[in-house]
Structures are given as structure tokens and as C-alpha cells.
Length: 241
Picture 1 (cartoon, rainbow, N blue to C red):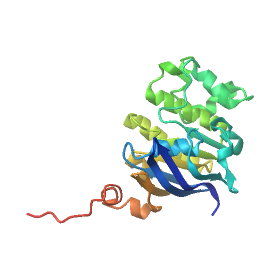
Picture 2: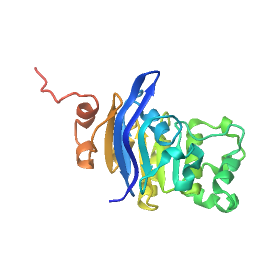
Picture 3: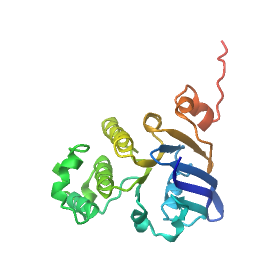
């Protein structure tokens, strides 16, 4: 198996308090690996460390053990890594069209709309709208469309469905499934939407108090009582009558 992204002994501290403690994981080529945890468990901090937005101790590597710490966040595309911030990657004074043209580079965005329409047909009618005027769901589908156009091999997604309607969540679920099966994306998904996680993931890791568990396979995380036991530490109990 080819490892495309890895963290080794990753430690993040804020004002002397350890937030992430000796985090280790490997993302395998073509895998959707989800890291789940409650609000405040450190998921966004982990994403920021991996994408070089904050300082950390330890090592984050891509593919052939290339150290990512030598890159700035905007340089990750050079090693075919892209990421989604919680709430979307939005420039408030850019139109949707300008966001997507920026992602397409020298390609003509007018020729890319059919590709985008296949997944997010509601976006075309918003192409003249400014990023700052978009709803939460619109920001996410615009950001995912931009990632689609940039076409990196490795995606790191921070809560892409947070606060969104069930309908938009279903659209994003189908999109992520296609990205894996049709395009072979390797996806690190940091999520609090456990229904989504259990439907799209190949493996799951829990994040509690800054520490990661081992990887769980589908048969384990799809079973009854997984969240209660592995995330909340509640063992099955016999109800007394």
C-alpha cells in the first residue's frame, strides 16, 4: 500500500497547553480516512497543522517522505495537496466565477462549467455573486468545485457538511464517493457528521483529548455501539427492570 500523507509524533500546543499529543496516522492512496471527534476535540487544529497554517512539533510528510514543513499553505498545490477550510475557502470580494477561474488557471472557465454542473448544477446561477453573499452551503459547493478544477491528488477536508441541510449533505456525500471511485482521490476527512463518515469512509480514527485511536475498519465502525464505546467510552449495559 502506498502512503500519500502521514503524520508522526505531531504535537501542537497553545499557550503551554497541549492540544494534540503525539498524533500518528497514515493516509493510503485512494482511501477515504475519516478522523471523528466532538466539537473542540482538535480536528481543526489537526487540519491547520497538516496544511502548515500553524506551528507544530513532529513530522508531516507527503508520498516519498517529503517533509511538508518547508512549504507554505499556498504552496501545497505544488505537491498535489489541496484542502477545504471549515466554512469554505472564500474571498468575500471575489465572484463565484472569479473563484473558479482562479482555480482553473489558464483554462477557460466557460468550458469547465459543464464539468461543475454534473455535481453542483445549482452553482451556475450564482456565478456573478460575491463570495461574501453566499450561504454556508453555497460556499462549500463553490469551494469543492474549485478543488475539483485544481485536481490535486490528496484532499484534506475540515467538516464540509457542518451546519448544512440534509439535502446539501447528500449532494456532498455523492460527490465525495465519486471523487474516490471515479477519480481515485485520497481524502482525509475531519468530520462531526457521523452518518456521512460511516457511508463514505474506508477507515475511521477517533480523536479524543488530543489523541488518536488506531484505525477502525468498516465492519467495526458500522456496528452497533461504536460511537458509544470508542468515542464516548460508554460500554453496553444491560438495562435493569
